[in-house]
Image 1 (cartoon, helix red, strand yellow):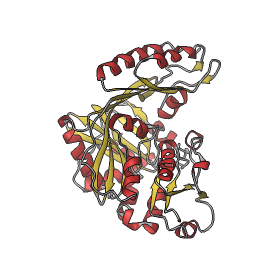
Image 2 (image 1 turned 90 degrees about the horizontal axis):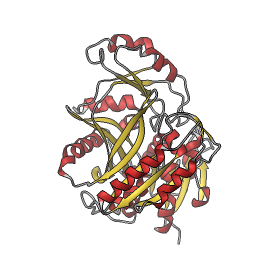
Image 3 (image 1 turned 45 degrees about the horizontal axis):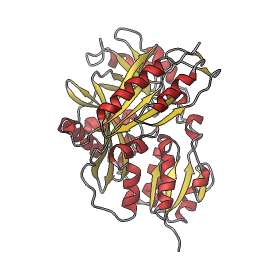
Image 4 (image 1 turned 135 degrees about the vertical axis):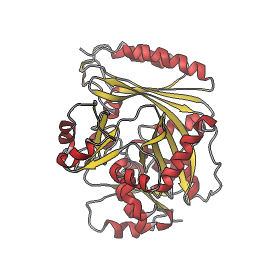
Length: 412
């Protein structure tokens, strides 16, 4: 019996978890690799053996070849595949596709901000420019003048190129440095976004959408720290109870944001800041959360966007509005506060002995050169640890001890 085909565009990062889950459920997973090629830090996770066929976007008649497979769904595996997956879904599986007219708003942060404003949703003041000269007047307005600014590529990922410009300093060098540079998704930055900096607590609300209905799969809280000139380096991700009434405003804001951007089917990864003025969008990503967060979510809740996608394709339509919280889960990223050569990586091995440690990834050895941590990708190159237990106090205690060990990592 022929198996139904599911297409995964750029199955990198957490997207590698789609193919095994689909195969176990009886589907035929097919990979499509986008072009231009994203950074090696993404593509090295690709496992071609997981797929029945691997196609490349620069090959001739990609649409025709995929149509011949009669796929039942097209999904992005990583941020670099979002735009292509969106286009292919419109043509091949329109019943499981997002609103086509809002496609640019789901992959471009400038268009995203405009769509949010058009829907009447509050956002931080945002400007998108191709030329620094076009920003001068707008940045002199009261919305921006006298405030810290954040400059970032319009279409990148993982805090790539995100730059803080303190109030009163010249923003032009930050903009100029990003324009024309190839970002982590393999795309040249032809536009950059300038936003007024937000202050508050940053959260993640991961969701699964079907028929335009958005259900929460997990809620997380980020802890970010400053390392040198980098002001938003990931340190911890803590999974929180999804049904906590304290998150109601955040979740409502996220659901309205998903509507504003035309989300209709599949997982989404939304980062939102809780500020004194209320929730404000950082960005929405039309894909599952990267960096293994989907697997961590399964520990926390017993479910994930990947599992929900597979169950939907198998015929399940009745999803609980929000999943329960089973375990306290925290992911700790390792941070190098200065560049140099690693000399005592064995200190991290002590984390493995902590009772709630479920996984330890150490990706460097003594003698390896390492740069100062500047973004999520550079943090992941160093390593991370995952802690999980039904007793939140035990997780917090082990997490604190792990931070102490990680602080002893020496780079000279």
